[in-house]
Length: 112
Image (tube, rainbow, N blue to C red):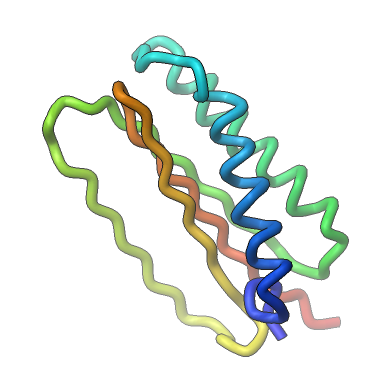
């Protein structure tokens, strides 16, 4: 079973703490080019720390994109060649009036 399909509660938990990481870092901020590197690093590090605390035997990949809102579209796609019975992904999209943020987590099971 994957981390993301073993139960709705776990899916909601992962989504929730990803959203909370984003909100905690960006919640009251306006877009600032000079702060983006600091923000994205904080979001991925906090997200990864929370994933590790779940105590699951997975390798995790966390990505974060922050884009200023100025009328342009933000499009993203991913493709994975993996075992869909053990591996999974979760993406959270967040926005405020000045920016968009998208965080994706990829979880790959470690088979011992």
